[in-house]
Image (cartoon, rainbow, N blue to C red; front, side, top):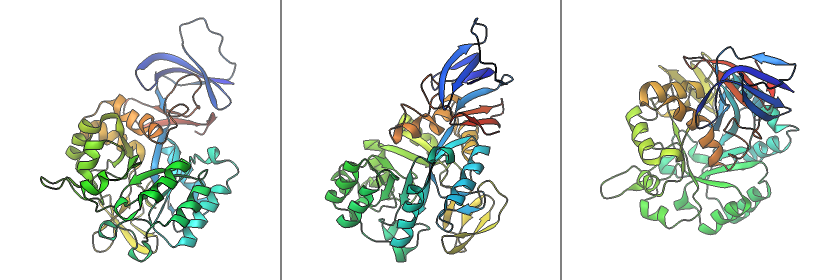
Length: 375
């Protein structure tokens, strides 16, 4: 048991000044004012007036720190991703595996299934982004591996529900009966890489999430609302990349005004995130980083090089969102999107002790992951 002392605690709602966070194992036992006559544990870490917030949760992370889960599908890769994440205040993530051959997808599932301690690596489950997507909106995905999700494969995925948290798919190419299999298993279906019309999407049930708003989806139009119009109308939990490249900051602000607490931030990061790399292998295709943009030789965007704390700063400085709301978009709202907001995304007694300490400039100064001080 230990206490983090002299911190201003953002509990998910408000900032409580000059507090102590008491941690027992991987749980927050209590949060108390420093001026109260409370006996604190003998082991203490002085927060020096920093702001404590819930650790960030990235629900779409392909790679970072010089590795990509698609090209190096192993526990070692997840360890590198986690260690890189911690530097940006991110304590949990969904390793994201993009469109690939069936055997490669199965390998990714097996790697997550074989982890002895997922929580120590920050892994909350797997995000399968494809291969069940639209060729018209494939983005950087390999068209040769795109296929329809059939019932047999859906049952296989359902059998691995403990490893798979989210599946991104194109609803127009996926029968409702197959979507139902995933939903009934507790796997969240996210619409993405879709060219569906608003009306096609309106015929589907159990589309609980949407993947990287605006990108790789049919746009909002005056006579065809498209996938963007469907999202604005139906308001599923929706991820958005806040790097100023995937979406203009004004577009992020408009989306937030419409979706409010159903909009959460993701990085969609790939190999170069957290490094100074200028070239990388994007699942078999050479890609480049130019002025922060990850892209193929033909200019196609191929992931992102942003980190969660950079996204938080962009939300505050460029989108015009309050610090508190930006922190919620990086922690509470993603936890809520995958049904874990009873344990993650807040600093309150009974919650998991995932704690990021920020200075006044929102630089990450220290991180605690599942109760362990990581730096």
